[in-house]
Image (cartoon, rainbow, N blue to C red; front, side):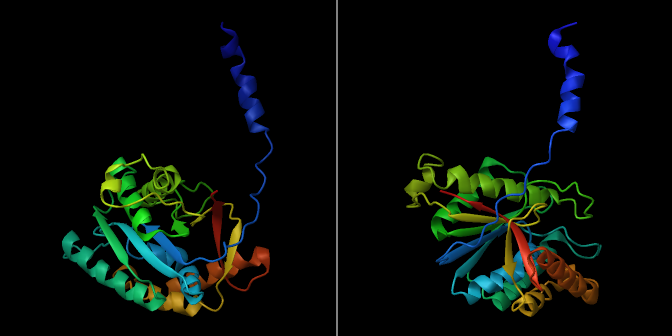
Length: 262
């Protein structure tokens, strides 16, 4: 038997006994955020994932824009509603929620809900918006499926949007020769300075959202087509904010994995 085959069990055992990864270094929000861009899969994802943080950024004077990658046309159990009808409803709900938070522009990429993949076309579409809107800060979805027992294990559209977003931020938006056709449209390269990833199992940045939680809930309530039991949703949001803040001594927080880019 070949040597590499006999060594395999020992290698597996060593992997099982390797020490856990250390916690990532704690970060703070970068200074002088003039523009931020939240990139999410569906209408309501930005509000469920980061509404209070978005309200906080707007309160600091930043312009916040959205990119929504899918049309949101699948999220219903009502047999009388078509995908087209639901998509139209959700676009209107998204605009209403964004207005509550003070969000400026919403770009709908209109990929079909439920079928999203991290294709080069999706990456290019996100790069186009990064170069056009030129944010210092990007809020992104987690591209990794959670395996920690959390019942929200990861909608495939969320995973695809997260992967495409991070690939767009680095290296595609900043490298001149990626998608050169965008240069023909006058879209010069852009370097994002910080990315905040939602839904991270090991966060390293906490935003104090105590002053913005009620605004976030008012924005969430605009997504009526997606909420059956408002009281339960409100309680869940408040509980999550409290739990997120506990490790850092905040009454209410939202936690992210922060990535700083040179």
